[in-house]
Length: 121
Image: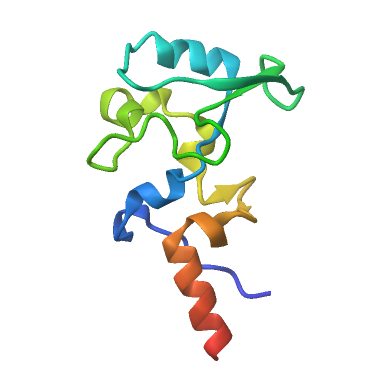
């Protein structure tokens, strides 16, 4: 199997595209982020989920809306203030458990472009 080249997000022409649907965040992470007092940023849909350290997760968007922490300039408000508090899911995207995420082809412009080039061959 051919190993994929690492995706460099800084090369992306529209970095807000990967935030189009928001992310799931551990409840304890969310509490720390809320303490930053970011205007407009909020969490939605508290759900029980044993895959998260606290046992709960919350979303950064309503339904299929853009992440509530994306600023007008298309950047992450959390990242701007404290990269250490940026949700793990967001730091790792477009990867998930060390592999390209199944949703990367929908949300990551670089992954999508690579997929188109591979199909043409």
